[in-house]
Length: 310
Picture 1 (tube, rainbow, N blue to C red):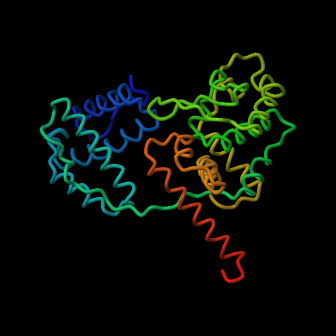
Picture 2: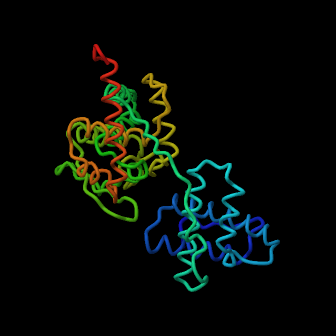
Picture 3: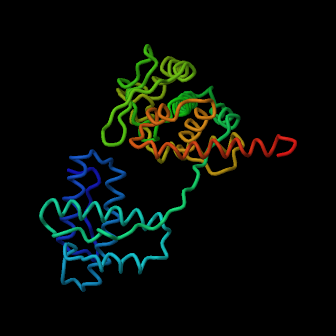
């Protein structure tokens, strides 16, 4: 069963609910969609299905939609942010492509429907000094503080996604080799080096704090909670914001900010873009190229700030 299965309630055609479930299940089994991605797809499709059900006054299922309906849906929701509209159109395009393969529709109604143009925003990152202050924020006199320091060190050393970090198991980390085996999007594995500081903090956490956190519980999570379970993404998000405030970082920050800092700082220090791509687990190098813009923007700001004729 798909990880994000839920009853599609409200004014949605009953047949549409089954089509959505079939699409989510197929994506989960064929492409290894994460629960978060599956849930996002479901939400976007339910929104369209409710709109279409109301438009058709309950007389037709979503497999009856045509290109004109997709265009009308976009037009009626033109007040949405372009990224939201583009994401929902992408979900619909994938949904109807699945239905077309299953022989449930003739043609994809999203064909020849253009996505909104998106301006490419630069990701928020941190300076190396800010990262140091953030890493030093946890209270090392507490077992949880040691755990949090180790997690932050690993996140900055590897550039993992937050879901990859909190989901790490003991078996995925090889301290002798100095590497972590990461299971990323689509179940794709990659081997990422840890670096000496991260290795040292993991060793210190395992030796001095991990057993004190879980007591007598058995847990395979590398960074467990007091219940022996992996920390949730939401809990880690709250944790990193708390430490950012303690470190005097007032700009908005998220776990992804350290991933951005990891990539940007590597490029600033001359690491090849394709190496950064492999470390981040990006399938397409165009996704990684955004960090070259961040690095250039950083250099430009430094020039303006410090050059006598900047």
